[in-house]
Image (cartoon, rainbow over the protein chains, first blue to last red):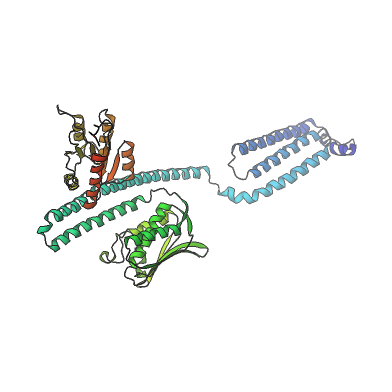
Length: 372
Length: 147
C-alpha cells in the first residue's frame, strides 16, 4: 500500500518540477498560471457539452460529444497535476492521468471519423433557413391545394345532390305521364303507340338506375370501411340464390368453394361480389350449359379470389376499358346494364387495398381475379 | 267527424299532379290541400289573414322547397304547440343518408323516397294514404262511434 502511494505521490528521491525551473519566480509563475488557466478553460468545455447533450435529446451521436467531454476533462486534469508537480513530485499520478487521457483521447478521435460524413452532411444554418423557407412555401402551396381540393369536393357533393334530386324529378314526370297516357288514352293508340310509351318508361328506369349507380360511385370514396371476418362462400351462395329467384327458368351450374373467409367490409364486398356474379349470370345467358364458379387460390404466396364463367367473354384488347365507368364491351341492347358496375367493383376493391384483373376469350368465358 | 284532409307540400307541378293522381287511383278521395312551399304550408297550418288553421290528418312534405325547405318547415311545425304532434311524412326524391338523418333528427314520422316508376309510386302512395288516414291513431282524435 505504501509502495503504491509512494509510486503515485512521489518520494524524496524525486524533485518537484519547480526545481528544474531553478525556482525562478517568473518561470514558475508562468507555468503555474498558464496551467491553471488552461485547466479552468478545459473544465468549462465539458460542462458546456454536457448541457448541450442534455438540452437536445434529439441530437444524434451523443456518445461522441460525451467522449469529447471526458477527453477535455482529462486534459484539464493533466494541467492541474502539471501545476501541482511544480511543487510536489506526483509524477506517478501524473503518468496515470496522462495514460487515461491518452486512452480516452484515442477513443474520442477514433469515434469522430465514422460520423464525419454525417456531420459534413448537416446543412449550414443559412442553408437550413433556405430549406425552411422552401418548406414554408411548399406548405402554403399545399394549403392552397387542399382548399382547392375541398372546394372541388364540395362542388362535387352539391352536384351529386342536384343529380340525386333534380335529375330524377323529370324522369318521374316522364314515367308518370306516359303511364297516365297508357291508362287514359291507351284505347286510342295502336299497339305500336303503346309499345313506344312502354319504351319511354323503360328508358326512364334505366336512367334512374344509372343516376343511382353514378351517385353511389361518387360517394364510394367517402364511405368508411368497417372490416370484419366475412364468410364469402355463404355470401356468394345467397347472392346466387337471389339471381336464381329473379330468373327461375335459367339452368346454371354453380360451383362455390366452401369456407372462403376474408377480412373485409361486408356491405361493400357484397356489392362487389353481387356485381361480378350478376355479370357472370348475364353474360352466360346465351350459353346452353352455363357455369359460374367462385373460389380462392394462391398465386406466388398471394391469396386471390376468383369468379369465373363460361359466357361470351370479350376481346382482351379492350381489357383496360373494362374497369372504367361508362365503358361497355357489348351493346346495351344485347346485355343491358349501366356500364358503371365494374367501376364500382374496382373502387370497392381499391378501397380494400386490393387489385382486380380480368382474363377472357371471346366465346369461351371470363375470369375475374381479385385480392381484398 | 269531418273528412280527413291531406296537406301536400310540393313545388313541382308535375309531382303534384302525379301525387294527386296516385291518391285518386288508390281510391283515396279525401281532400288534398296543396301548398307550394314551406311558408305557404305554415300559413295554412297556423292560419293567416283571418283564415282558420287547417288540421290535416297527415302532411306530405317535399324535402327540397323554395323559401323554406322541408326540414326547416318541419322544425317550425314541431316548434309550435298546436302542430308539434302532427304526422309528417317526408316524401322526397332524394335518398341521401344525410337527408334521412336530418329529417329524423327533426322528428319526421316517416321518410319515403318517391319511386320513378309510376306503378310503384301509386303503390307507395296508396299505402301511405291507407296508413295515415285509416290505420294511424292520433292523440286526442275522436273515438269511433263503435266497433
